[in-house]
Amino acid sequence: MKLTALLIGAGGRGYYAYAPYAKNYPHELEFVAVAEPDPVRRQLFADCYGIGQQNVFADWQEALSRSKMADVVFICTQDRMHFDPTMMALQQGYHVLLEKPISPEAGECLLMEQEAALRQRILTVCHVLRFTPFWSQVKAVLQEGAIGEIVSVQLNENVGYFHMAHSFVRGNWRHAAQSSPMILAKSCHDMDLLSWLVDQECTRISSFGSLMHFRPEHAPQNSAQRCTDGCLAESACPYAAPRFYLGDGREWAKFITADLSNSGIIHALQEGPYGRCVYRCDNDVVDHQVVNAEFAGGATALFNMCGFTRDSSRHIQIMGTKGEIRGFMEQSRFVVFDFLTHRETEVKVHAPGTGHHGGDEGLVRSFLREVRELEGAGGTYHVKSVIQGHMMCFAAEESRVNGGKTVVMSDYRKNFG
Image 1 (cartoon, rainbow, N blue to C red):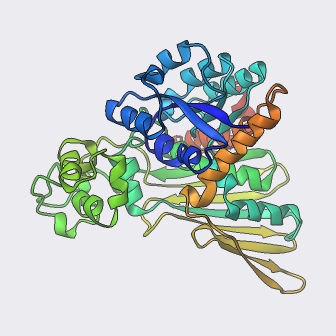
Image 2: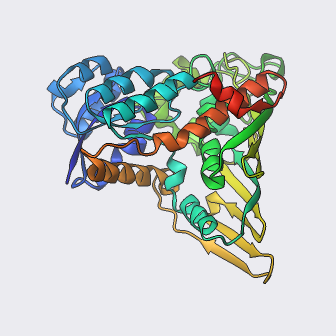
């Protein structure tokens, strides 16, 4: 059964991560409408997916005010633009695939969960890592009891020095009030993973972190406001924008301009936010953060996020009563060690070449399957199970801004009923 979809937000995630599923599996999914404020991206998407002009909209309100025109809605707007279109889509009877985070406001997260239950619609949140072969296999090994009861988990998120500069210093997620705190915008994936893998209620949490480096006082001598303004410090700066977007990071240029010629990229750097000096932006989100968590059964978790790493990767160590797991997501492998036999088993998984090591495609496939299976039967698949991870993010940020004070989760939840 082929399902039809409306896309709200034809940016990096909507256009490049999730929509290609319809190209790869046209018998399963067809986009019949798009809402996108940028006229260039809007028309590019409409042309790419053969959408008639009657179903091409400049804003989501107009699209959702029409009679229901598809089976599902993909909502891929910016963080603080999730709540209103999601609520309206659910009320219109759409099943919703929602880009993470659910919302930067804890109360809005809970309201969306309640609305999905009330309307008996599926609301799936784009925690794509759950759907990668790597994390799925780690979860399966834990469920088999291979390392006994989980005692402690250490999870490292290496953001990557230029991913940090692109997204969280120059880009859309640089300012917490305009988007989300770093722990939610980037690391809600990781809080979700910890919650999902340990599979217990989180009872206490604390956090430390700061914006340590990307500040005006660290700007090199003779640096310019923009990298394209004849910056005399460019040769010694690892964050120089032209070197990245015209060189090793050229694939990232599609996120800053639709014109991927050299002149188009240079123009975007001269006029847009991505050409600014990283020490002279209006960013305020942290560039490193740690989180400590305790779960109901006594297990503990330590999460470390840092923007100053050579690449974007995640490493995990899960310590159990009978053994341990050490995993390296970007290498698509993990090792299981048995304390009794000393047997060491390496598990290698196939990582598709698609986004997030196959997670983007796996997420869409799972969402469509759930819609087909539960249509008419009701259900709030996925959103209920990710609420704890989001609440851990909110509580961790409250702890961080209050000097690392421990937050008791049961007390924290009472603030939201």
